[in-house]
Image (cartoon, rainbow, N blue to C red; front, side, top):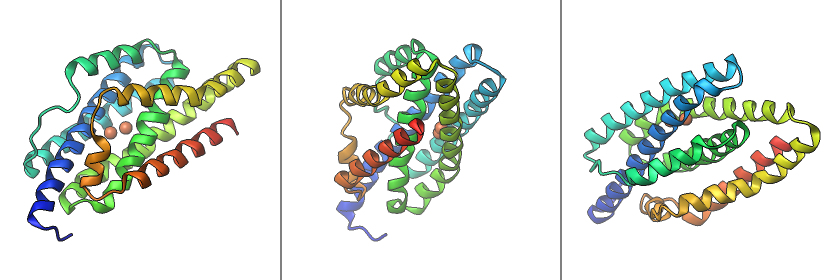
Length: 215
Ligand SMILES: [Fe+2]
Ligand SMILES: [Fe+2]
């Protein structure tokens, strides 16, 4: 990738923000999963959550090391206050809603967004994302299979009602994240990713996930 000095400065600034964001989100997920272990419905769920806590802490370490090498200003992009509020929101969700919000939205759509950026990144950033993105596939598979199982265990009418409610949940969480007012699409644009293309990829992924859940 050959960038002019000005483009290069813009790229580094935007990639720095995206790396900080990814790290903050991973740390948030790590804490959300840890908080769920005690109330998880069975051993499979408990073990999956515990493994994920380990994975996310490894991701946070990998990313922190890379950000230091890359010379990123490690200033948080999401405030502590917003993170605390979000943690509280997640803590209050029942198991089905927790699985929906964390795995369908944050893990599946979040890592899809990161995947879209990978081909545009510098080699060091790309390497820093390799292990985390491999693990995210596992996390999404775990969360969605738990969600499928939890839905299947409900009486048919309730399962149907929960399924019907999922698109609305996705909208609500996306709106809540939008309230953080992070110029994320601008950062994606500055690293060379077409924001319109990104949004339509995410919509397609969301629709495919919803379809596979209902099947
Ligand atoms: Fe992660
Ligand atoms: Fe993850």
